[in-house]
Length: 263
Picture: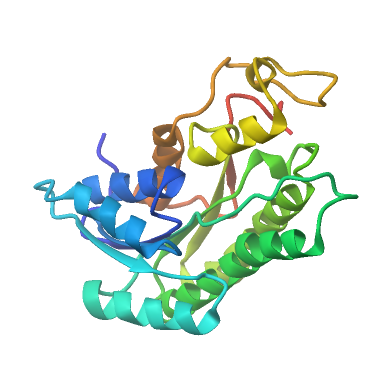
């Protein structure tokens, strides 16, 4: 079944140069959306956008460099996108960073950077786009959080805290934007086959326990016995953006193979 409400829409995806963000941008493009692909690595976003080409379904890709922690840059980017593609109908917040360290050893700089991108940056973008959506009384927003917001994990304290804050921030956005008919939801992936998870596995020294779990490393396993693919996460995001999810808001859809044990 084709998801309604995506073809011809205008979508902004942050963190769109690689990983989950790139997968979501590609899926929206394939569904016929006009996709603004924003990333701090603008050259990578442009290179990836160039691979999408004409899919025969009307989709367009507009790459741009964007630091989501800069309110002025975000305001300018949103204005440029709407001048180029039209009013933004869909927003997908994906941009995020992870700095691994035990909390008692975490540098303040790394903690602040994690919060600045994952929480503050997501707030800045959602506020900038949400204001415009509220004026038009239409739109759908999905933010990629993490099941790390639900399960404490060693050496990921700043990341866990920032993602937990993002999840609740989106619930408040959902509550406040609901009178304007705007839906706001989150998708919480677990371990997903991306460059971020590969870096984490290398730094944490994980082997089979990534899937199987480890009491010694306080690591919960994945009951389905596999990592998620980027496509698994993108499918969940597109559903929540679509008209089929027209009565769903303030919801968090966990895509982790059971890794958070339903927490």
